[in-house]
Length: 98
Image (cartoon, rainbow, N blue to C red; front, side, top):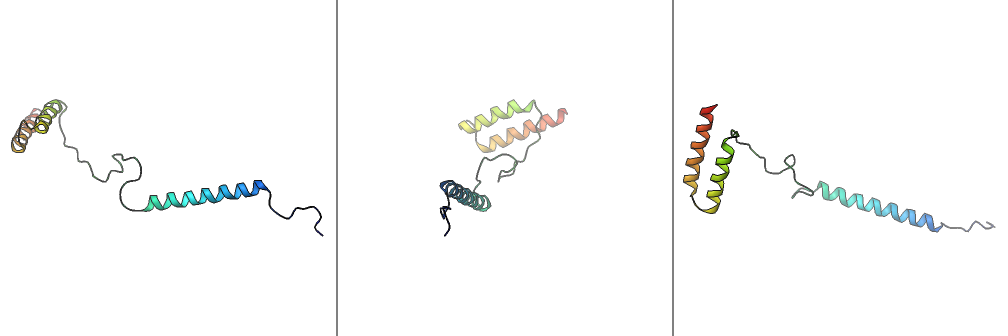
């Protein structure tokens, strides 16, 4: 006979095994979501942005004028053609000052 060994696992072993399988399943789900292509999962930064950002070299003094120009276009005060004309003139004027 086996004596008083009990012949089974204690409650702590069952809890530990359950936690292990939950952690393993959670890791597998996280890994699959991370590896799937498609929309970004998590915060988007400039480093991992799907749209590359191309900076237009603008002199610091031109920034306020361009901001006002952007606001005028957004409010509908000027049309796109006027916007492009004024923006080109601003950028040309700033490049000549350098």
